[in-house]
Image (tube, rainbow, N blue to C red; front, top):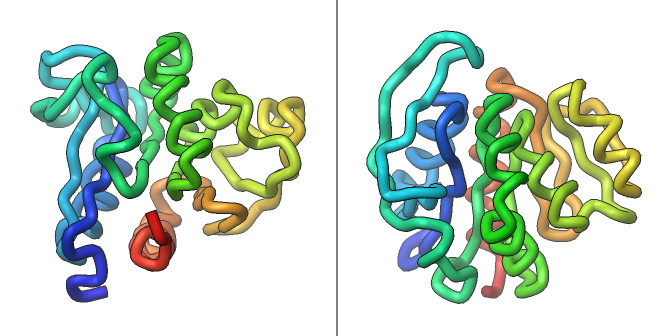
Amino acid sequence: MAQSLRGRRIAILATDGVEQVELEEPRAAVEQSGGHADLIALSEEPIQAMNADVEKADTFAVDLTVESASAENYDALILPGGTTNPDKLRQNERAVGLVADFVEAGKPIAAICHGPWLLVEADVVRGRTLTSYPSVRTDIRNAGGTVVDKEVVIDGGLITSRNPDDLPAFCEALVREFAASQT
């Protein structure tokens, strides 16, 4: 993976309630591979991460708001989970629009745990195969997607995983797929 993302800019879309490890580990994988990751959130205020959805963890400085962000400026997108993070984001029209813009531009998106809720809200799962946290799977099926129970699923530029236990495979897959994309 060494330097395979050199010169690549990766967006991470998250807000309060993000699962800390699902933010930190993919970001570290991008940076260790030579890429640059920006944290995009709903406001300029630092976001509050969580551990297992219930314990406050660290706060993270925001690089850009969704209002200022554009898919044109990035090569790929990461959607970390945590229950409340994607639930808040999917209620924001601009956040959902940003996800749709990445798909429309043919740029890869990696979503873990509850992160695929944003893919559902952006109406981009129809005809695709994904995985997610178990409670999100019915939403994916109702949106026309197929769900499988695997640690990583790659389909048409979407890289999905189930939970923090899948992070090693998820990070490896997202670096590989982001490096291979021709954005």
